[in-house]
Amino acid sequence: MAPRMTRQRAAVAQALEGSSDFRSAQQLHESLRASGDGIGLATVYRTLQQLADGGEVDVLRTADGESVYRRCARREHHHHLVCRSCGRAVEIDGPGVEEWAARIGAAQGFADVEHTVELSGTCARCREAVGPA
Amino acid sequence: MAPRMTRQRAAVAQALEGSSDFRSAQQLHESLRASGDGIGLATVYRTLQQLADGGEVDVLRTADGESVYRRCARREHHHHLVCRSCGRAVEIDGPGVEEWAARIGAAQGFADVEHTVELSGTCARCREAVGPA
DNA sequence: ACGAGTTTGACAATCATTCTCACCAGGGCA
DNA sequence: TGCCCTGGTGAGAATGATTGTCAAACTCGT
Ligand SMILES: [Zn+2]
Ligand SMILES: [Zn+2]
Ligand SMILES: [Zn+2]
Ligand SMILES: [Zn+2]
Image 1 (cartoon, chains in turn cyan, orange, blue, brown):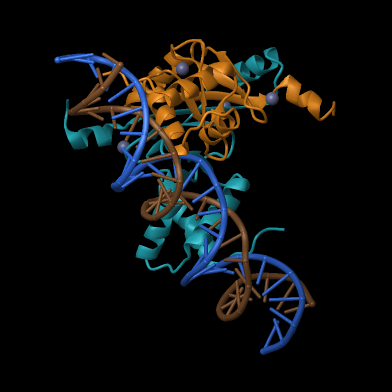
Image 2 (tube, protein in one colour):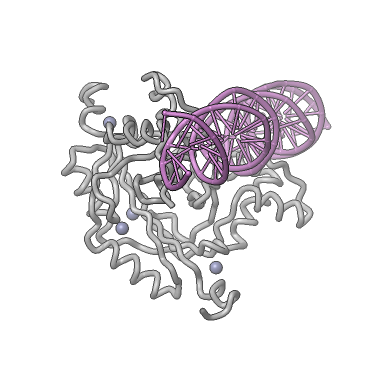
């Protein structure tokens, strides 16, 4: 059954809709608190987990192991190019990558092959912030 | 300067040489302890970190966020196909992936683009363990 | 409005990893 | 070979993100 619609769940969903950056549970919790929405940290974690399980949001791990979440425009499988300093992300396709991954896996006798393909860099805006090299 | 060669460092290096599986610091610590080599957990972590920094070993994160290490045959850039259940890994190349990643990054105005491309699945041996579906 | 069944949230618990810092040992040198 | 300086070690504490707990608050179908 669909989860109940609560004030908290709506707030988290809306916070995600509002930005195109990948953000951590802690960051979301803090900004929700700041904007007046009373909400517990555990609830933010639970909600994000559910949204992720349902494919509503994408999750990925930053270099230091923190999970960050983003509401992507498309629900279909895709990959990301994420800014290491601000979290801004662009959705990208890996034409050929999908097929390549499956082929390699089969060739090595592996089953249920999944792939992780993510790109990270410094976006133009963040680059300006420090000035041209 | 090169780090000193200590009994502990040698033990960790040897433990890594011995296997083709990605293993966690905790697992390595335990097996070293079991085989009689007295060594502290912190030392295992420190040593692995240094080896990783020096490009001696490859590191990657399991689904649950744990870091796992492996001494790969080649030091050059490459990717892996890892068994989710036993950690066994095969080194693979991503012909085209390297160039593709750089191109996408540049097209989006990102600099210093890095890429993460890892495959995971269930190896033939682990599949047998549970019997044919 | 009512009540069963969910959801919430303050706080404790987990757990991998890092930090501390007193003690120990590698190795260049005499 | 013996000394000494300096880097390495390790038991235990600290960190920090994430999860577990459970009584109180809330949803929603009736
Ligand atoms: Zn940026
Ligand atoms: Zn893909
Ligand atoms: Zn396996
Ligand atoms: Zn590559």
